[in-house]
Length: 295
Image (tube, rainbow, N blue to C red):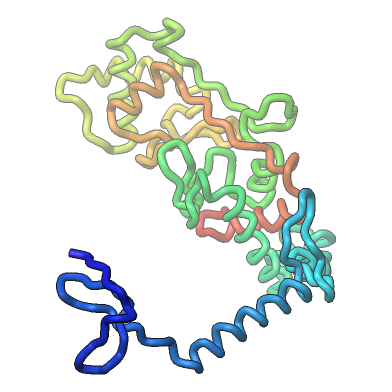
């Protein structure tokens, strides 16, 4: 309970000091002044802050802020640091611009620069889909293995980065078009099931006990072998995946394979050549190639 007393008539018997007149549950607050050293520091900080207001930018205006006596600006300091960094980076990257991809891989100094720049560019532009380490995910390729839809050589990776995959308006983009066999009425439901089981058979995976594998092999030869090859080994020139390695961009479980055959897949990758400069594309190419799956 809070009570208020007249501080002029209230004294603490133990200390002989007056109280503030406030009481909480029988405990009275002493009217003890702050130490002089504490007050001195407090007032000094006020004077110090006034000096800051005058010397440094401090007061916001409608469209700007006061500049201060010395005209200091952290934004300008950052811009100056960035200008120095760009100049240093340009000197390091100049060798990348003039060297071929093979020369960059063979030259330890150029390779280090390319890896550093490529890693930064990958983190900024590619990691959102492929993961920070390039391990990918469902619908996004794993860049650490040696399985490539369009090839894992330096030249092939550069082309893929430069022109992207299924990019509208880019005549050089990577394009593959698997028919939607179910949606377009090319195969019936039981036929799709037979082909899906055969695809799992090609990868050495289990099939349904009552699957008509003979029908699946026949339909595969008639509809799929032209792109994937008679043995399902794929064709990088067409972007047709190898179906025998049990590695699939969208999953090798029966439901995922059935969905792919029924409705097809049409993933899109940006054409980074429209967004990044040629030197950065080179650095990215070298970095991706070096993740572990470069051919």
